[in-house]
Amino acid sequence: MCGIVGYIGKKTAQDVLLTSLKRLEYRGYDSAGIATLDDDNQPQLARAVGKISELEQVVQQAPHAGHLGIGHTRWATHGGVTTVNAHPHHVGDIWLVHNGIIENYKDLKAELSDVDFASDTDTEVLAALINREYTAGVKLQDALAKALKRVRGTYGVAVFSPREPEHIVVARLGSPLVIGVGQGETIIASDASALLGYTREAIYLNDGELAVCSRDNVDVFNLNLQHLNAHAETIQGDLAQIQKGGYDHFLLKEIMEQANTLQNTLSGRIDPQAGTMRLGGTNLSPQELKTLRHIVIVGCGTAYYAGLLASYYMEQLIPDITVEVVIASEYRYRSFHLPAHSVALIVSQSGETADTLACLREIKKRGTKTLGIVNVVGSTIAREVDGGTYVHAGPEISVASTKAFTAQVVAMLMFAGMVAESHGGNKALISELTQELAMLPAEIDNTLKTHQQTIEQLAKKYAKFDDALYLGRDTAYPVALEGALKLKEVSYLHAEGYASGELKHGPIALVDETFFEVFDILDNWLFEKSIGGLHEVRARGGKTIVFTNATDKDIEADDIVRLNTPIKHLAPLLLNNLQQLFAYYVAVQRGNDVDQPRNLAKSVTVE
Ligand code: F6R
Image 1 (cartoon, protein in one colour):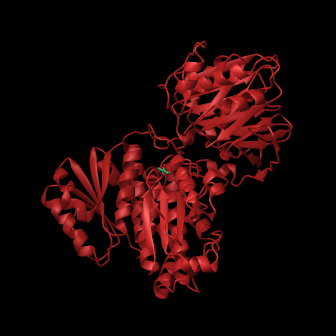
Image 2: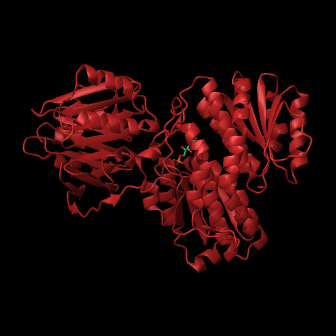
Image 3: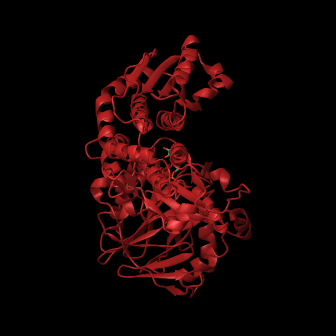
């Protein structure tokens, strides 16, 4: 979603701002802009609809010379995708970029009836509000704090004024802001990856905090302007991780590197010889683990599907526990009750998803322990949960989530294995799953490399269709849901996932020669039932693709991709890898912007 950057230091601000904005491109945006202050304290503005490359062209025509500036990638919420609505906005001496939503902007706008607003945005209203407070003699941080106290909603903001060229003032509530502390320079961003290459030391601002950032100093305050102690932390990761590494797209890179990233997820957490798994960081006492009776898994989109798949394993592993998996945007508004001895797993790649974060807060209010299953280190969810783990999948730059799904499922599985052990769960199954986890990275690598070309050919064949159904049973059901989501996100094909058993209850009406159906079929006790659904579709003229781990069973379909792997329980993850490749190649065939699909944002920080 929207991205913020800011710079004050010795370098030419426009260069740092544009480079940093490019690092945030993956978050999804539809317009971008920068505003700088030159050495004579003259502000200069450049904005453009479309990619950062469009903004670069605008900047090339009128280069910015200053050493202080702010920049933004906008994902439209209030007001259409136009240059005038793009950030930065300015009113009087206030120059502002903003992430989030000012919910009471209409009321505030009514109060500011003397202002001639140029845009339709809530952000310009905020700029006007700050400007109204910014009267002679008042400092920028005072004006900002005062204005923010009037605001209902969420914000990450960076503000400068030509009257105070020695600093940029930033603040956050519900929208991330990180301040990179360099040598004689300070870099601001909504995502630590934008700081890589400039500095590794960063202060993560907390909700309700404001910071005054100059070249050599960062002072953090609360909104009452009481000084707070802030500590710089070391940013994890490096530049290589956020580059394409020879692949055409980040999406392909992230699919293909899953064997490596999964090694990081597993590292130090499984003991194949002992047949045990252990997930550190959960902050649950042995007694709490033993008495645990209820697990609720919360997520959105792919993270929700990861939770759904993990829940099947949890139920198999832990005999005396109830597992429910919920969609964060629904759960946050439900009158839910969690019984004693519950724990909530909060699943999020970005750690910033607004609905998931809101659920976390609702669950905490009810006194239930929350554990994060999070990828981005230092993210808001990771900071607010009572315990939990990082899945260590590394930066996911492509908007569609792939390697994070695999890592999330595996992290939750290891959590389940640990709980199962303390509940006297099925030791043989825990051990089998541990052995499979140990083999999984190599099997993922093998699966992807063996089938890459076949899947590319399949994609060529099916890219001309407009509709698809994905069907699966048991652990292949969440995989079918995820497969359909991935295809629709990147290829823009209409795709729906269903439990195979639901086929006859409605979706079969859709089957004709214009649809194709993907069947995820596992070689298990439900094999015959899954094949039944396949026959029903074929009898009605449906075009069928089967992804399966059944190597020696007769299957009739238009196309079959058979995994050859000793992995059984975790085969759904391998089927999902095939689907990820399929979605990728269909999107390439259709000439789509694979890494930044239309209308989508990587980190959904608004409701
Ligand atoms: C799918 C996708 C989204 C995210 C969802 C949750 O490819 O990327 O469905 O999974 O927005 O995001 P996180 O995991 O960051 O909370």
